[in-house]
Length: 83
Image 1 (tube, rainbow, N blue to C red):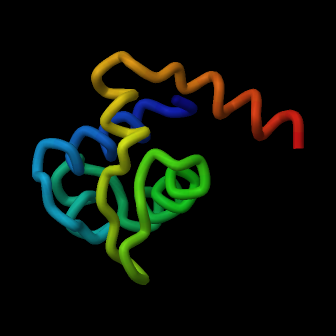
Image 2: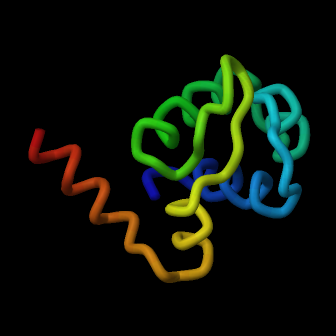
C-alpha cells in the first residue's frame, strides 16, 4: 500500500460492507474529502476498490484479499512501474 490512508479507506469499506462516497469515508477516517477522493481513484485503478458509479465505491476481492494478508500490494506497485 502506498499510504496509510489507503489501508484505512479499504478497511472502512470492508467494515461497513456498504457502497460509500468519498465524503462518508473522509468523515469516518478524519481526512479531507479531496484527499480521500484522490486515493480512491488510485485504489480503483489498482483494483483494490470498485467504482460502482461516479462518487460511489465498494471494496473489491483484491481489497479483501489484501486485508486478509492473502495479497501482496507490492505486486501492483511493480505492475505500474513496468508500464
